[in-house]
Image (cartoon, rainbow over the protein chains, first blue to last red):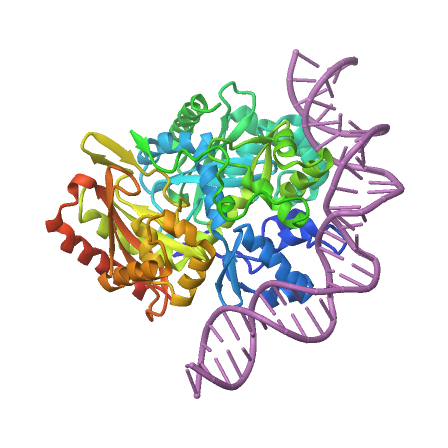
Length: 278
Length: 278
DNA sequence: CGCGAATTCCCACATTATGGGGAACGCTAA
DNA sequence: TTAGCGTTCCCCATAATGTGGGAATTCGCG
C-alpha cells in the first residue's frame, strides 16, 4: 500500500521552493518564521539545539524565537527541550475552515459526486496566490488499482505542485493571462521541467487548449497507478478561478468510453459549486 | 438551532485572554505575530488599513508585517487590499494531524464509542502547555435536546476554557501538582470565577475528588441543553495526561441510571487510547 | 488607456534584536 | 526528599535592523 504525500522529504517545506533559507541580513522577522519551516512530517518535534544548528542562531536567539512563537501559540513544548507546532495553528486552520466558502460548497456538493463512481475519489483544490492546496476530499481514502492500494490520507492541506497534475493545470489555465505571463517570467524553468512547454508560445498554447476543452486529464503523472480528470471551479460571476474539482481513479478504470460522462459530471459539480460561491 | 463555537466575538482570539495587545516596546517580533490575532470567525479577511488602525502601526510597518507573513505563507491576499490567513496554516495543521498520536488513536477508537449511544457525540481533547483544544469529534454533528438542536460544527480546533467544562477539568485534575499550583498562582482569579474554588485548598480538594472519581460530569455548564461526562486519557505508562475523552449528550438523556455505564465505556475507550500512545 | 488605490522603495534615526556568560529554574533519577 | 544536570531566562554593551514619513511604482478597475 502506497501513500501519497505522507512521505515528505526530511526538510522540503513547500515555501523553500521559492524562498531559500534566508541569508543573515534578510530581516529577523522573516528569520524567526523560518523556524516553522523546520517542522516536517518526518520531524514533527524539534529540539532547540537542532534549530540552533540548522539555522545558525546563537543559543539566546534560538530560545528567544522559540519563546516568542510559543507565546503566540504557534509552537508548544512537548517535553523538556522538545517543541512541536502549537495549538494556534489548529485554531487558525479552524477559522479558515469556517470562513472558506469553497470548502463549505464542497462539503455540500462533493458527497453526491463521489457516490457516482465507486473506487474513485473527488478532490477539491484551491489556489492561494501561487500555491495550490487540496482543500477537501470525498470518497474512499484509498483506491484499488490492480492489486495496488493507493491512498491519499489526510488530503486537506496536501500541497500540490503548481505546474503538474490535472488539479493544478485546471486552475493554472484559467488564471488571467497577465498572471500566467508573470508566472512564466518568474518560474519558466519549473514550467518547462514539468513538461508544460519549453517557451512562452508553447506554454500559452497548452494552457489555451486546456481552457478550450474545459477540462484536463492526466494518467500516471501524479502516481503511476492513478488517473485524474479535473475541471476549473469559477466564481459565481465566472470572472475568476476559485479552484478545481478533480476525480481520481485507478488508471485501469479510466477508459475512453467513460471520459465524456466523467467530464460532464465534474462540470455539473463545478457549476453547482460556483452558484454557492461569492 | 444553536451552534457552539461558531460565534466568536469579533476580536476575542484566545491568546488575548492571557496576553493583551502588546504595548509598543514589547518586541517587534511578537508585535508582528499579533497580526494573526486580528483574524476571527466573524472577520476572516482584513484590509491593511484595519491592521494599521487596530494595532497602531504606521502604513509602512503594517505593509512590512503583512509582506513578511505573506512570504511565509501565513497570510495570503484574497483581493486588492484584502488579506486572509494563508495556505501555510492549512499545511502546518496537516503536519500536526499526521504527527499527532492522540488524533490517530482517536480515529481508531472513537467511532465504536460514538456508535454505542445515539444522539450523543464523543470528543477527544488535547492539552497544549496551558490550552485545551478539541482535536477530534465522532458522532452526529448536532444533538437534539427536547426540540433544540445543538450542534458543534467543525469541532477540531475549537478552543475550550481551561477551567470550565468536563473535558478541561478531566485534564486539569491530572496535571502534576506543581503545575496546578503554578497555574493557581498565575490564574487563581480565573479559577475562582469558573467556580473551581475560592482558595488553593478548595481548588486542590475539588481536583483531588475528580482524580479520585476518575471522571467529571457536568450538566448545563457548557451549554444549557447539554450534559457531558469526561475521563482523562493518560500516556501509555500512565505518567501524564495526554488529553481527555468526553461524551456529550442531551441534558435530558443524562439519567443517573446510565451514569455508570457511560463512565465505564469512556474509561474503556481511554484505556484503548492509552495503549496506542507513546 | 488612464485614473485612483494599493504596495513598494528610500533613507535618517533610534528602537530593538543580538549573543556571550552566568544564574535560576524545572525536570529526572537516586 | 535531595542531588545533579540540562533547559531556560536574565543582564547588558554593541550594532544590526526595524521604523515611519513621503515619493515612486505598480496594480487593478472602469
